Image 1 (cartoon, one colour):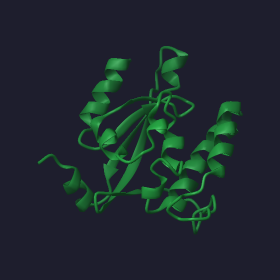
Image 2: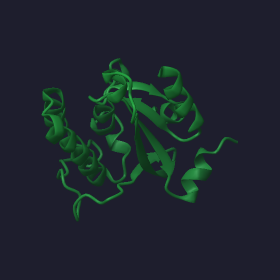
Image 3: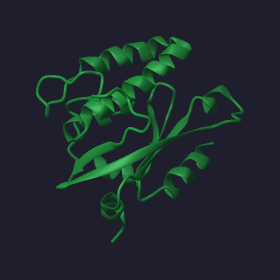
Length: 172
C-alpha cells in the first residue's frame, strides 16, 4: 500500500499531493508540497503533522492563503461531513480547535462561512515568492481496501487552476 501511495504522489510532481489518514494526519507528501512550506512554524512540521492545522494555523499557511475565508469554509464543510458520518471525537476536537484560529495576516478573524456559501469547487490561492498560486484539488480514496487502515487513507492532489500556476511550478 505504501509503495502505491508513494508512486501516486511522485507521479503527480511537480504539483503538490499528499496522503492523510482519517484524522488528517500526514502520512506522506511529495516534493511539490514540501516546496510550499517555507516560512511555516517548525513546530507545526513535527510529527504527527495535521494538515488542517498546518493549513489554518496562524503560524502555518494561513497568512499566505489569499482566499482564507473561502478555504476555511471549504475545509470546515469537509470536516463537518466527516463528523456527521461518524461522530469521531478526535475530529470534533480538531474542528473546535480550528475554529479558534484567526489569520495573523487578516487581523481579527474571518467567519467560518465564505461570502456566498461554500462553492462546489473551492480553489486554494497561496501566495509564494511574489506570486499567487491557484490550485483546485481532488481527493482519492481506496475503494477496495483490504483492511481498515487502507480504507481510512486519502490522497489529496492539487492541480494548477491557471496557466500562471502551471508555469511557475514547471521544472526549469
